Image 1 (cartoon, helix red, strand yellow):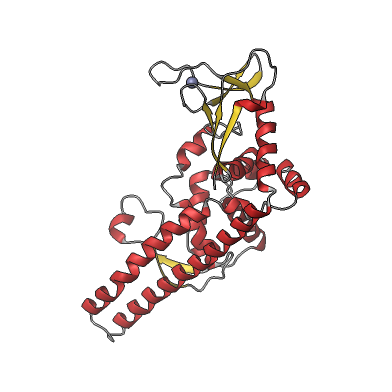
Image 2 (cartoon, rainbow, N blue to C red; image 1 turned 90 degrees about the vertical axis):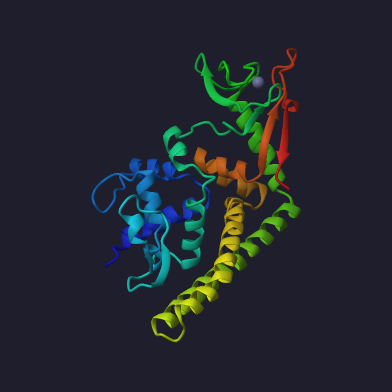
Length: 307
Ligand SMILES: [Zn+2]
C-alpha cells in the first residue's frame, strides 16, 4: 500500500505515453533499454503493462470483478465500486481514458506487440493500383514500402516506394496540415468534448455507486435498484463508446504548436509515437505507380485527411 515515489513516477510516465498514442510494446521496449523493471524484478511486457494501466487501483479506486469470470480468465475491466484507501497515482479522469482506450477492441495489442513495427507508414500506405495495404520491406538493404506480392492475397505486388523519402515527405505534409489555425481550433474543441464526456461518465458511475449503497442500506428494494440503474447503464455505454472514438485523436492535443515546435517534438519521438500522430491526421495515403522519367515524385501520394 505504500507507494515508492520512483515507481509512481514510472506509472505516470507510462500512462502519459499511452494516452499520447504510443503502443504498449514501444513503452516496454523503452523501459527495457533503461533497465526499468517491475516491483518483482521482471522486465515489463505489454500484457502486464496493459493490466496495470487499465486497473482502477492506480487512480486510488477499487473495482469489483465477478467471481465466476475470475476463475477462468480475469476480464480486463471490473466495475468501479468505491474510492479505495490507497493514494492515487493518476487522476480518475486519466484512469477512465486509459480504461476506455485499453479495452477498445479495435486496438489489437497482441498483434501490435508481436510485430513491433519499425516502419512509420506500414498499413497506412495503400497501393494505387490494387488498393492493398503496403508494408515495409528492404531490398538490397534499402528500406522500401511495397505492395506485397503474396499469391491469393489479391495484392498486385506492382508498386514500391523508397521508405526514407516517403517518410520525410509524409512528415512534411502532416506537419503542414497541422500548422493551420482551423485544425488547431478543431482539436481544441474536441479536447473540450473529451473533458465533458469524461465528467458525464464519472457522474453516472457515482450515481450507480449511490444506488448500490441505498440498496445495501435497505432504503430501496432490489427491484427499484435494477429499474433505476437501467437508463444509467445505457447512457454510460453510449458515452464510453464516444469517449473511445475521441481518444483516438488525443495524440494531437499535446503535439500541435508552431511549425518549429512540432518539428522539434517529432524529432525526439520514436516510430510508434510518430505513427500515432500520422494516424490521427490521415486515414490512408494512396501511392500511384512511379513515373519512370522522374527519380522522386511527390505527386504520387494522395492523402485521405481526417476532417
Ligand atoms: Zn498493388
